[in-house]
Image (cartoon, rainbow, N blue to C red):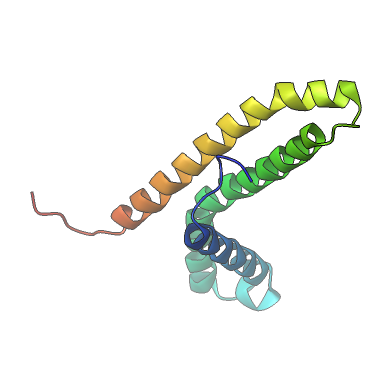
Length: 122
């Protein structure tokens, strides 16, 4: 695909987090949870924690789709010249943005794991 491709295991982990985020969102909207405030608070905390990774990951996937589309336009020798010019102009920025988001996601997963440590000996 492009330089913004990540490790498949890493992407699988992010896909699993997205699925959990969607499940938590659905459970939070359930009428049964509305009557259990402790469960709702627990879900809201998990939802917020997941959201900080899920939103950028979904943006990363959107950008990867745009990168693939631009690459396919550029690969078509019979394509429209204006579209090729536009794709050529946008491709470097999309790649830069996707790479930046991917770096932030990696840092976010590491920081997220570190944030769960209750005590640190220095």
